[in-house]
Length: 143
Image 1 (cartoon, rainbow, N blue to C red):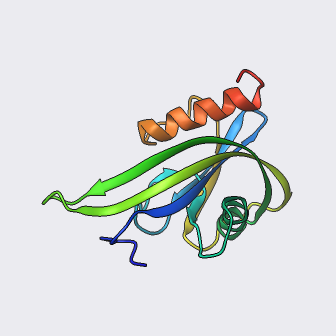
Image 2: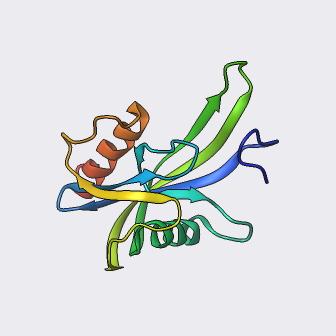
């Protein structure tokens, strides 16, 4: 399936990996969001469950083995071109996750990674910041 100018929405997953109040961000090496900081994740492959997809994507992008704990949010990420045509359309399921193993090392479409605190989220989309804030509250047991 084409990711750019698709015929239908694409299912995707995102991981909010929380450790000691910090969240793991990656710098995207490919579109959409090339060069921007974001959450690890990507498209679900045919025959793959959401949890299998998030484990695979995080391992491929970061070298970390994670455990998905809870679903945080389901949302649409739709980008349009100057003519108003849908350039990208993802239906994303974001999960609160924790690290179970591995070593942080960028791979596949991630060109950078860093642990960020609540005051280091500048440059992320407002929706991504809201999901991170909700996940941090969930991790702390507030939700």
